[in-house]
Amino acid sequence: MNVDVQIAADAAGIPASDSIRDWVQRAVNETAPGRDVDVSVRIVDEHEMRALNRDYRDQDQPTNVLAFPAGDAGFVPPGERLLLGDIVVCATVVAGEAEEQGKPLDHHWGHMLVHGTLHLLGHDHATDRDAEVMETLERRVLASLGIADPYAGN
Image 1: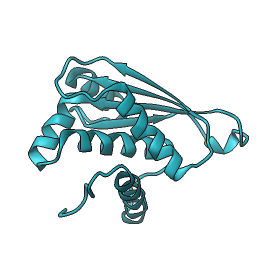
Image 2: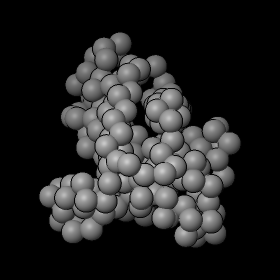
Image 3: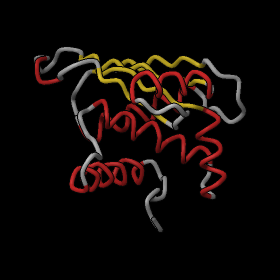
Image 4: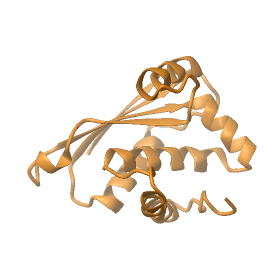
């Protein structure tokens, strides 16, 4: 598994690249065991995230995490390395959310990376049923990392 981490923001609290890799790897290993994947993770500022969110989702505001799948994993033969895609995380939005929600910053970072990775693996939360499936997977992966249920109390 290859996780390329790019830090393009100057913000406090950005986790170490090894932690970012660990969270992505755990999400892949828990939900798609045995897959050899390539993932890129880019940590950005609000300006870059706002532009991406505006250009790709028609939302003219920064968001916490975006995922850009590379293609259909069904066409990659088992045993072949799969290019999953890109995860983009806005450092200041994640920090602000963690503070607002009273969560440890590293736990919220872990949640965002697991969430983005699950999107790359084809999961979504567009419907209530899809959200239930995705959130169950998130809870399972996060629990394996010692991170509390991010949806408790919602």
